Length: 337
Image (cartoon, rainbow, N blue to C red; front, side, top):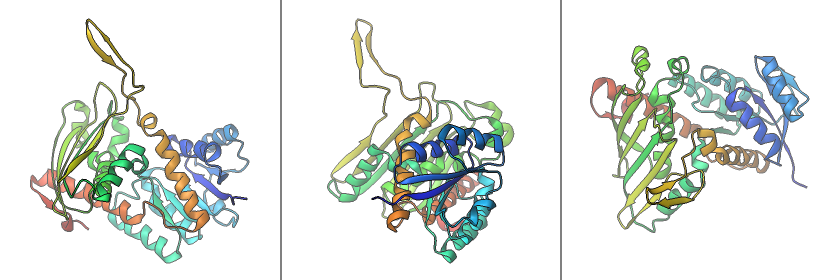
């Protein structure tokens, strides 16, 4: 019989509740042993929905339980690092939502704890597990269309998040573009230099907190390839997610996925389906697959697919982009950290 991995979820807000439901309903090799949230009533509601019997407010209560092999951390970003330290010291494997932390010293401290205690550590860059984006990666990595020359990523949200959220998120480059930095590394390789420009064009309230709602980031990769990322916090037509890797002997593209593939034609022209409006709709399957693979790695003692090095690299790139934007110049990634 397949061995089940006992896992606890710390943080049962928006992302934590999604992960808890996936663990309980869609990942047979996992046993959701406990849920935890400082808002006990929120954790209890998730537990009641999923039939989980153990609910705690303080995650420390879970650390001494030897039956729990792994922990999924989906708390506020500013708590990730110290929870990682505690969970690693307890000898439990860790899945941590991105980013690991917004301060590189905290990131490095958490990764040192993971290494010291020899636990597995996966970071939640879910887009690597999208079937289309993964297929582009596989085509490029195979070399069948030559060497990568140009990467293009367009990633545009349907509406800006609340200012209260953005104020503590690390800003656009560390909250939104961080996914695209990771995807760029996944597709083409290490990035050596960034040049970022940006503005406030669609959400004027963002100017008051020193953030952006629109940006373009140019990339130089270590292998000589070039790249460009464009982001907007408001695409009124839906959640716009496109990727292209142009290579010396061809190109691999991942286009938007609409709600369906139907196109209606009439005397007025062509009408196609809308794009998904919410990232959880567009990437729902990815959230299942990333945690399924983590559980498999714990159960079968395999390396995780997205590790601490990847999590740190994305944060470094976010800092490099902010430095480039503020100083209006290209920034070598080696200047950061």
